[in-house]
Length: 292
Image (cartoon, rainbow, N blue to C red; front, side, top):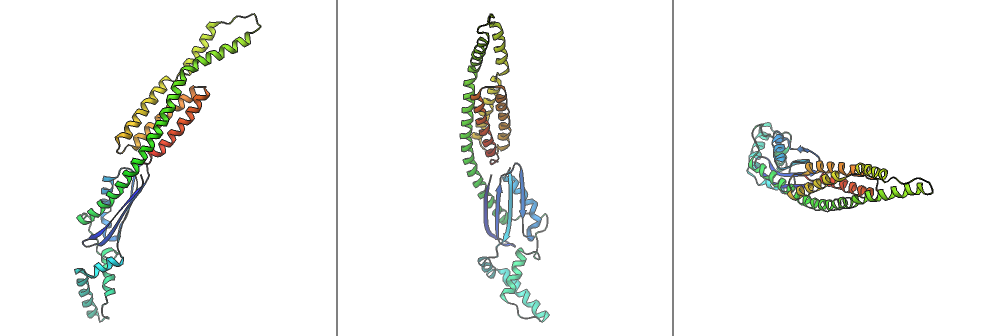
C-alpha cells in the first residue's frame, strides 16, 4: 500500500532532524534508507525497526538535518554554540587568524550535527530514545495512512467479489438447462436429417450422445470449488491484517476454475459470464497487490 509519514524534532548530539518515510506497492518488503553521515552506523537498526512495523511494499526512509532558519536559531541559543565559539576563538588566537564570526560557529555546528566531517555514532552504540521516538512517530503516520487506504481497497474488493459471485450464480443457474437444450438441438437435427427417409430415430443413440455431452460439459465440481474460494476470499477481507499474498493465491485458484468452466461449456451465455468473471478476478488481483 502507498502512504507517507513524517516527524521532526531535536535529538541530543544531532540537532533538529526531519524523518520522512514513504511506501509504494510491492509484492515483498524492500527498505531503502538515506541517512546523514553521523548516523550511518544505525542503518541496520532503522531497517529492523521498519520491518517490525511494515510487512510489504517498497519503503523509502530518509533522515535529514534541519538547516532552516528556525533550526539555526536554536543552535545560536544552545550551550554547544558557546562551547564551539570558545574553542574556535582559542584556535584562531593560537594560529594568529582573524576573529571568529557567528557564521563560522554556525557552520561548524551544522557540520558536527549532519555533515560528513562531524562526529558519528559508533557501531553498536544503539539508537537513542529521542531518535527512536522520531522514527516511531513517522512510522505511526505511515501505518495510519496505509490502514486508511487498505480499508477503502477492501470495500472496493468486496464489491468486486459480489459481482464475481453473481457471475458464478448465473453460470450455476444456466448449467442444468444446457443438457436439455443440447438434447433438443440434437433431436431437431437428427429428425431434420431423417425427414423423408425410411429410417427410424434410435432414441438410445440420442441418449448416449446426450450422456457423453453431459459428462464432457459437467462443471459441478468447478462451481463448487469456485464457491469455496469466494467464501474464503470474503473471510480474508473481513479478517483484515496482512492478507495480500493469501488473496493473490486464492484468486489464482479461482481463475483456474473459471477458465476450466469456460473450456468445458459451449454455451454462449456461459462464455459471456466467464469473460466477465475473469475481468473481475483481474481487478481483484490488482487491488490485492495494494494490501499488505
